[in-house]
Length: 255
Image 1 (cartoon, rainbow, N blue to C red):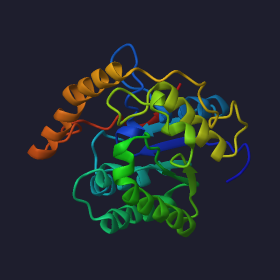
Image 2 (image 1 turned 45 degrees about the vertical axis):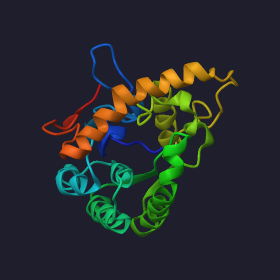
Image 3 (image 1 turned 60 degrees about the vertical axis):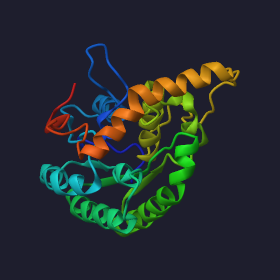
């Protein structure tokens, strides 16, 4: 990694986190940290090209099988690889297998680019995080070793206290909101050795806790609109990304 290095192309690989959910735009599409990062990199490199192969709901095996080879073939300067969290959040998960498939993807991507970036994904504070924390920490410990083996950078979002703040998460409690994605983009920007625009780890201002009734109403709305549909997809073997093409499948100029 070089300080203030110029990157002329960027390919993002992953799931809904990299696709940009839930940083919504007025037309109903999603922006997200990868688009924000691409826009900033494009300002420094005329003719900058960007592809985003991420698809919501993808497991690490699907990312390794469907995205790694096409991304490697693009030969971009910069590649980001984030995956595995959808696997470890499922009731049954072989974390060792998840790690093996992540290694497979990294081994294919690292030789194809100038800089590979991995992440320790953020987690929203609450009971879900605590239930799955051992699996997540096992995965993220593996990511650290993976980076050493392949000369990759690791952006530690899991260790950033502010990204656990529920106010940086969407109503589905699974995806960051616009401010959360803005901070992730800045975290990657700084990890690449670029000049900081702000301190992405700064905590949010203190706020009064919502009352008991408001919290219960929020929990009920979350269960009805997000949790039950998610459980339904798991029971039926469906994914929110079934039949959905990659966000930006070709490495094309990005204005």
